[in-house]
Length: 244
Ligand code: ZN
Image (cartoon, rainbow, N blue to C red; front, side, top):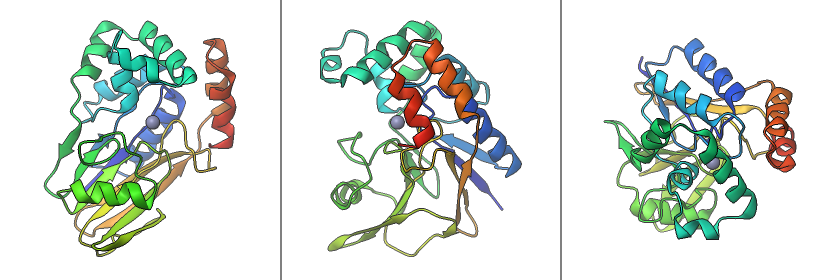
């Protein structure tokens, strides 16, 4: 049985990342893939980048990864104030070698049985695969039967239904449903937004086509203390306990 582990949206939360990596180790994954947003919001961006690099985990670029590598880009002006603060702080923390590594990440990775992106397939990579409209846009550009994404921090499964709007449901542990195209949003390691504060990750078994969603507890108070010690906005800390 070939097991692939998926994790995404770590957002500088090293305690959550370590909890998820040890869960995926327990599950004996043959391969682990990271769907981007290693940094932003959280207090330990360097530790998170270096943990992923040390394990040589294949990784796609997330929007926050892109923001921190776009030094002095005018697009920065359009970022929300709290995101801009987090981007500038993260830039001040990351060694140049880690910034360079983030800057060379691809927008998608293709395996034999599936492809992965951070946000969505198509020319607008930062669309949130979280609504019928966004999923319809995604499926119009998704050129593979099975895709995995992150970005919205809410685990869902979406089925392409051709002319009819896509079917969306909360992701749970299940056999992969039959549909022309399927997109699985794996949720977030370091900042879940579905009112469940536990870290999220997914394991997919290639031969049985079985999807498993795991929610992994970690020391939220420790991460909150690190956020406050770093002088980052208080909201970054409080939202972790609320899972939103
Ligand atoms: Zn994210």
